[in-house]
Amino acid sequence: MKESRTGCDLKSCYLCTHCVEHWIPAIAANKKNYFVKRSQQIFSEGDAVTGLYFIFSGIVKVHKRWDDDKEIIIRFAKAGDILGHLGLGNEPVYPVSATAIEPALVCFIDLAFFESSLKVNSQLTYSLMKFFANELQESEKRMRNLVHMPVKARIALSLLNLKKQFGLTEKGAINVELTRQDLASFAAVAYETLFKVTNDFIQSNLVAVKGKSITILNDTLLNHIAMETAVNI
Image 1: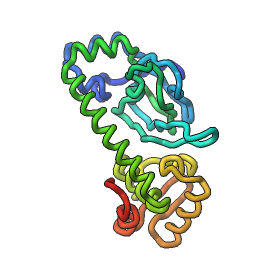
Image 2 (image 1 turned 45 degrees about the vertical axis):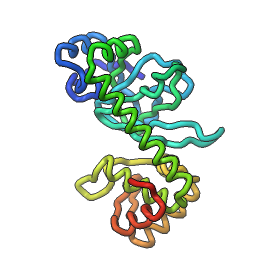
Image 3 (image 1 turned 135 degrees about the horizontal axis):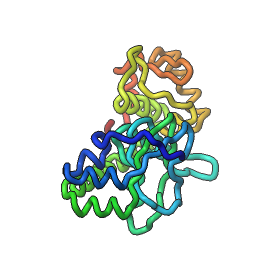
Image 4 (image 1 turned 90 degrees about the vertical axis):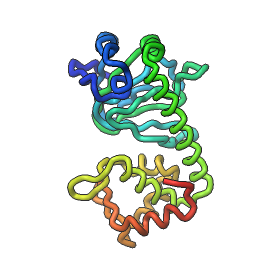
């Protein structure tokens, strides 16, 4: 990553929005901003934890090795989100990887300063505790869905979740462009399965696909396919 002269605004990231106002100058003095190119890794699974990252702009995928040649995308992070927090446990290594899927600007805070921020800012500590609890609930729900849902339902649910998280463009497409491989990794299905099911959805007028752009044409039916065996969206 390349250190960037363009800094964040000290207003929109997770850290700044949950700290008391008088702590903001300390953040400004300790942060580093990095520009991340498309497909560039921010940190890799198994790396020693050096600090946390906060996204100012762009979209990042958080992913984990599935086996030797596959990965599963756990979540997508966008502006305002936090990265690297899963490495705060007793084993100081990142248990996941983070890779930009579009050019991104991130703010880096080293571990020592972040721990000082937690001690000074009770609201940040409380908010992070709730954030961990919510993420654990979502993770457990996602794992149950992956175990119990057929692949067609998993793909439908993944498309609906992407729409929920990123919204729509002016033309009505989901406001994030993913490679088919990334979409397959997010749905936890093989690429060939994704290709087949997506073609079925297109022929049934459930979705329209143009390049990396996906438009949901029939929310009701797609939601019915997803919710047959899903725990929840």
